[in-house]
Length: 160
Ligand code: FES
Ligand code: FES
Image (cartoon, rainbow, N blue to C red; front, side):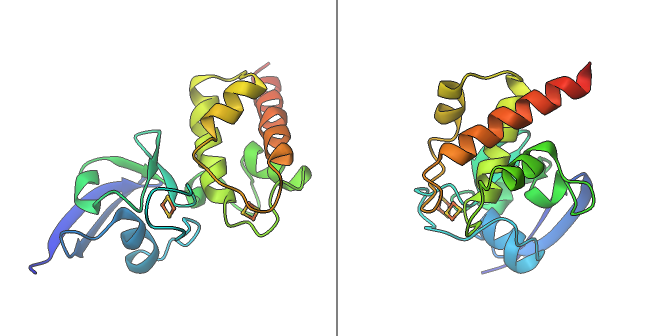
């Protein structure tokens, strides 16, 4: 099949790549662009480990043909913080032991970021609802909910 060229913004930088037309965004990120924070879980839309932000909205990259992000704004975990300057959500996941194997963490953090961007002070129920598509087999979820609550408080405090 003839390759197509797709151009989009990835973590704030213009990006273009030539791929087979039905290549998923997840494959493009991991195998073509070598952004491995986005995890390759079920590949069927059931686990949330591949979640990225497309125009700020949580999106399952395993289900989305990369051609559909032409001209769009894509954010992966690599785009929100660095080891030297963690995003408050990354720091809170560390502080609350909310990442064990870490397989769910990238998707969880990006889904949480989308929530806090639109609702800076969510209730625990709202956090649970926002993360309901992201499965974690390790933590029992409570540390994750506490981490998001903590990050929300930190981010609100940083505004004042
Ligand atoms: S890998 Fe995309 S939802 Fe599981
Ligand atoms: S920390 Fe292992 S799946 Fe969530």
